[in-house]
Image (cartoon, rainbow, N blue to C red; front, side):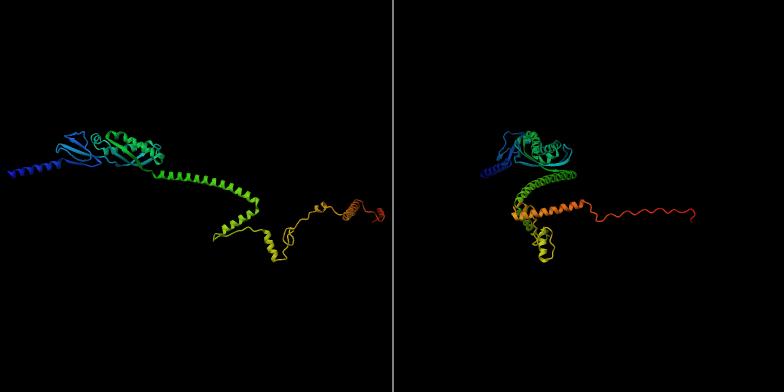
Length: 335
C-alpha cells in the first residue's frame, strides 16, 4: 500500500513538474508578453518577470520595446532642380502599443522599412539639391512626419530619422567645385582690396607724420636695411648721396675739379646777395666815391653812344673826279 502511494505521489510530482515547465514563461524587462488563448488575444498584457500560461491552449508572443535602428537602402531620384542623386538614411523607431504592432500589421519591421524608402524618394523629388546638402535638419523633420503618420496605427512611433549620405554625379561634383573655387577667389580678392585700402590709409598717415620729422625717414630706411640684411642670401641695394661720393673722391684726388656750385671744401658755394650792399647804409666818403665813379662811368657811356651815332670827320678834302676821256673817232680812210 505504501509503495502504491509513493508511486502515485511520484507520478503526480512528475506531472506537475512537466506542467510547470510547459506553462512557465519569463518576460524580460524590455519585453511585453501577449497571450493568445485559442486564437483570441487576452486583454491582460504580461509584464516583465515570471508568468504562467495554459499549455496547449495559450500561446505567448513577446514584443521588444527597445529602439530599433533600421538602415534605409540608398534611393535614387531626381530633385526639383533636375539633379540625379542617391540618398540613404537611417530610421530609429520603437513599439509603444504591443497589441497593435502584432495584430494590425503582419511584420511591423518590414512595414516601417518600406514606408521609409517610399517617403525618402518622395522627399528627394520635393527638395532641391542645396536643401539636401545644407538644410538636412528640415528634411529630416519632414521625413519623420511622413513615416510617423501611418506608423502610429501600427503601434510604432518614429523616434528620429537621419539622412546619412548624398551621392552626386561626377560632373555635378566638378561643377560645384568650380563654383566653390570661384566664390573663394572672389572673397579673397575682396579681402585683398580691403587690406590694400586700409594699408594705403595707414601709409598716408605715416608719410604725413614722417614729413614733419625728416630724421624719421632716415630711421625707417635704416630699419628696412636691417630687415633686408637679416636674410643670408640677399643683395642689398642702398641709395647713396652723390655729394658724399664727390667728397670721398676729392679726399683721395686733390686735383678733382669742383663743380660751379661748390667751394673748396666741397660744400655748395654761397651765392652772393647783390642786393645786400644796397640795403646796408654806406658811409659818407664811400658814398661820394661811389657816386663819382658812377657819374664818370655814365659820361663815358654817353660819349661812346654819341660817337657811334655821328659820322667820322674828314681829314682831307675829297679828290675831284677824273675827267672822262673823249671817244676816239676813226677816219673813213683808216684801216
